[in-house]
Amino acid sequence: MNPHAKLLSSMSLLLGTTITISSNHWMMAWTGLEINTLAIIPLISKSHHPRAIEAAIKYFLVQAAASALVLFSSLTNAWFTGQWDITQLNHPTSCLLLTTAIAMKLGMVPFHFWFPEVLQGSTLTTALLLSTVMKFPPITILLMTSHSLNSTLLFTMAIASAALGGWMGLNQTQLRKILAFSSISHLGWMTIIMIYNPKLTLLTFYLYTLITATVFLTLNKTKALKLSTMMTSWTKIPTLNAALMLTLLSLAGLPPLTGFLPKWLIIQELTKQELTPAATIITMLSLLSLFFYLRLTYYSTITLPPNSTNHMKQWHINKPTNAMIAILATTSTLLLPLSPMILTTI
Image 1 (cartoon, one colour):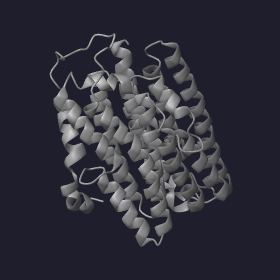
Image 2 (cartoon, helix red, strand yellow; image 1 turned 30 degrees about the horizontal axis):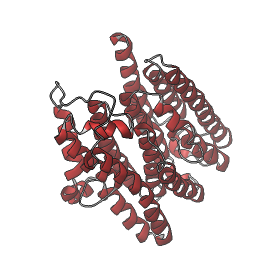
Image 3 (cartoon, helix red, strand yellow; image 1 turned 90 degrees about the vertical axis):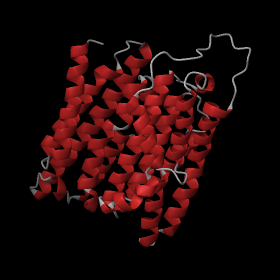
């Protein structure tokens, strides 16, 4: 890809995200979302592979439909209430339309079908952007309107996302699809607590972004795209693969790793709100996700590849391990002891 085009797309992504998260007016937020959509499409289709082109077209169609719903929701609200302020979303139909539109943009159940396919057609770095940066503006809009959204609808979508994200990830062999269903499952955790504690949703998103970035960058470094190549990647950088194992367990939410903190706080908050059945259900559903995370860790560090492989093994990698991956891997696994300090910031 042309460096100038890549720079333009990256700057547009930054601009669109900044406009959306800093705006109070619906039209400005919608403009930011549109800039984001148009900026990521060249990055998805840059490999010119038929699967990448297909992924770009799917992404464009879904995001265009979701943006139209956002615009329709804001227009309906302005028609009945005279308000263009994002925080003044009071009309029931507008709330329903907005929840549907943001669910489409995020890839939540039942609007999740496009997300694994688009990630599978993208490179690992673009998949990282789709899983983290592109979700920030829609989550910000949800947070700003959380006080007026339908709690029953959000609860249903959250439980369904946690269930389907865990269930559909069980039989996948492609790493990008596994991480896509992992993202859907984590969206369920973020959404279920949004009405009661929006700051906790934001904290969960930040920590999810941190851990997911570590996983994607590590896989990009070892050039692992499916489980079979993951089995041989331990021979390239054994220390990095050991860190990947801990990061995946952190993403699963196992103590005493960083990923345990948001799940612990969400379960605590749900219990405080007398929603113990919901907390129990979503905790049980996280066991489904835990299974495929454990399978990934097993493949990455414990399984030895068979000796009768037909392809050449790369026994070492020439480039030194990136310092950023080392820092990310450390923070992705060792932040739990700092939880009292983190809690004072939210």
